[in-house]
Image (cartoon, rainbow over all chains, first blue to last red; front, side):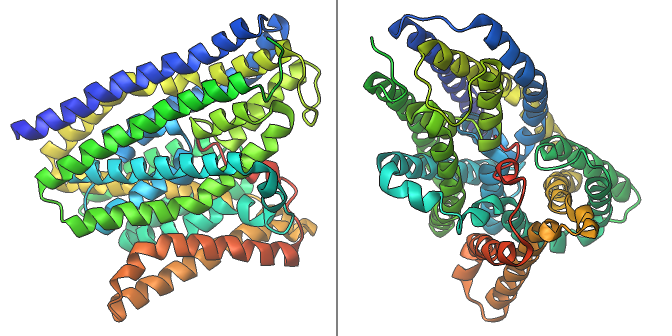
Length: 221
Length: 258
């Protein structure tokens, strides 16, 4: 148990150090660009651009941290919030890995498997993009070909169809209400679409956890 | 120094940042592998986790690459390379860059030549995504601690809690797949494409699962998700042919992701 604590503690310690260092580097980058090309931003446009971007993305960002941390585990979180693409890549990858290894996200085994899976996924993503950037000229016609375009734009339905089968078959009773709620919301509320699904993830999570709690208390699960 | 969106100095700086981020992943990977050994997790389980995570990542990573290509037209290669390798999803970065360019009165398709415009876009993109980047290292330990407490108090509930979270997220994305079906009544059959793609992927997953258990083909379960993903994506080409092209592609390319 002591050993167990120390691994988790070290994950948090190094996670914090790496995370905040990378933050610093990412903020230093625009500063350096300003210095190197000796220029300042267009302040009025910057304010306007930030006003259009910040409120929505900061709100989503903050909610995402609280929603995804319990699912990703500690190591997975420290990596995912730096490398990005959580809901369309890192989280499904980690969920699938934990499922196949038959470990729970809240256990230390789950923590380790999730970290391995997300680290591998991050490394592979970075390498693929690196190769893509090097070969960007020959690859552009392929990547932008109108024939392939639908395949890339339909990645989320293709991803969550498979994932849903695994989880719904395992939790049939629990899945009925959340899916019904989300179907009704997305079909009948026009404002809910690709751009706002991020906000609905925490709604879905909270609702499902609530339903699960009630069903568990009543001995239905 | 003379400015260009593809200036070598930009490549060098972006290359260094990406190397640091890569080092972080390697650092955590090595430590987790060591810990896995100590915990007695079977070597085959670890190996499978590595290979299937790598295989699964290929298709979504190529979709991210498509975003780099799209953004590189106005922003050059280094900036989109950085933004999409490190944090950032296509939707977010496209919207952030779009907001900045609009505020500057610059059209999205033309290459930026003025460094003033470039740094303005750069700052909007950097600050816009900063919230979770700063917050995650600061609060993860607290949230994680809370989860552990639940686990210690009631093991069964902790398991259900976990499944409920995953299910909640999946249900939100399932709902999203149906978000355009209301347009079908108005003659826009495109709304059926995501639904059909999801159905194909689900059927493939179910069939693979059955085959794996009935015929005892273990490796099939390891690659079931990537296979259903690729078949689903391929079917999108077919369904788009039948129902017509999707109007809001740019938005759907990847959702809020990040």
